[in-house]
Image 1 (tube, rainbow, N blue to C red):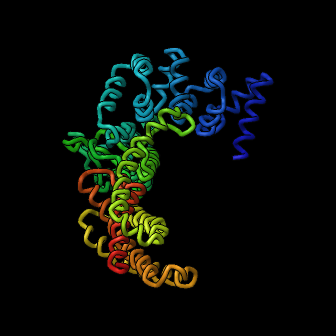
Image 2 (cartoon, rainbow, N blue to C red; image 1 turned 120 degrees about the vertical axis):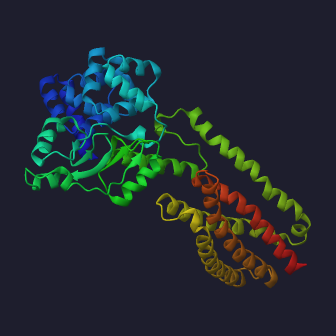
Length: 450
């Protein structure tokens, strides 16, 4: 981080002293990712100045790493010819990613500066369902025919490889553009010139369909540890590939979304510091209202046992610790199950095994917590009495078992109902567990104390 700050300070010094030739050389020798970060530190006027010091290739690459606000400012400020240069040099999937988030006027400006073929491809990509494999893929990949010799294949790669997003894996198609195999570049390099591609290719190919969800695509990448994955249409024709850099973005996006849902927030794609206060409030208030209203369940339970609390006031002092322990236990279980489902380790069909396991875990944790609590109350709360201590300890043990069970059931139930399991974590489980914990607590108290 310190090195990056020093680099940015060096660029600023060159700019302030008017050493523009040196600045241009340094900028075009720098890593594009670092330059994209540098743009976020600049004023709007300086962003445009620095951008015009970059070569066409570097400008397109840096542009693909910029945040949406900087991209929109650049496109809005530069000429049509400069827009055309960026689009010509960028990979198609990066162009589509930008256009998906850009306002309509900028989309029109970009589209009118592309040729008819590129414009048709962009429009086709924009029509794929959001978060689908089709919306992620790129069409810049190496296509080979099985009848080609290795010599012909290498010639094809050298001829077209410069414009491809990756050449490490080549995809073999037939005359109908159907995917029939893959061949790594390493295999071609090590093979004899006269050998046929169809004799070297791997025929057992795993691919995804354009309509498959991006989360499923991420699971496949994780399972097979690939750098790229072919995408086919419904007729099994090869239409594109998804590269691992795009999947890293998907994993980051999905993880952030799950964290927001688990914290009872509406998902947002914007950075925190760039999100308006009103939008932040809007993203939070909905679930806060839902949880507040659902919290009346606890109030109803407490009001039902007013007489019990009045006769044994000391019971009220343990409500917080019992409901808090239950909420924590339920959140632990739900977090583990949601993680397992996200990684593909737990399926809906495993519901009974999961419930049985969490019941046993809950029983062990409940017995230990109940015993420790009984010992604590006996040693340090002599004024409560044995029956009250027993009531609190038994309630805690029962609540932990119940909470663990609820914590594992709700995410699986959400999956069955086609709802994001992350929505069933944290505050949602705590609210439900609080009401049930109070019912158990007061019921045990009424049995043992009256």
